[in-house]
Length: 84
Image 1: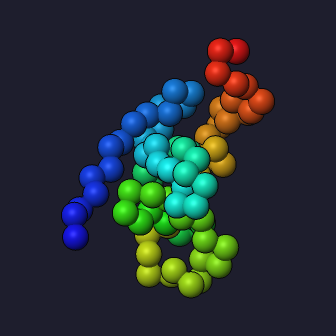
Image 2: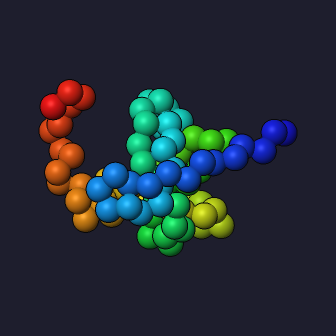
Image 3: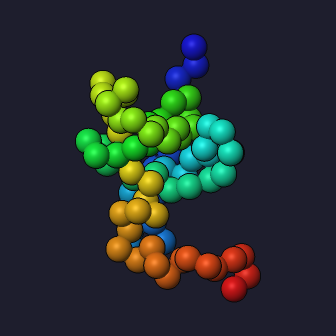
């Protein structure tokens, strides 16, 4: 199996380290916090992020948070579209 290397980027608002990953089901891009968070509901598998509804099921996996949830400046991005 090929190991996936994740590239660390920075949030343009707060500078926090994030991964830009596609969702395993929707293929929508989202910033995912690099920092592991035991309260997180996101796991990373094969370079994609997976949202889990029952974190206890994946208790042994490293969990992360969507950066839209943790960014102190997230509100400035809501409702914006490219070109605005």
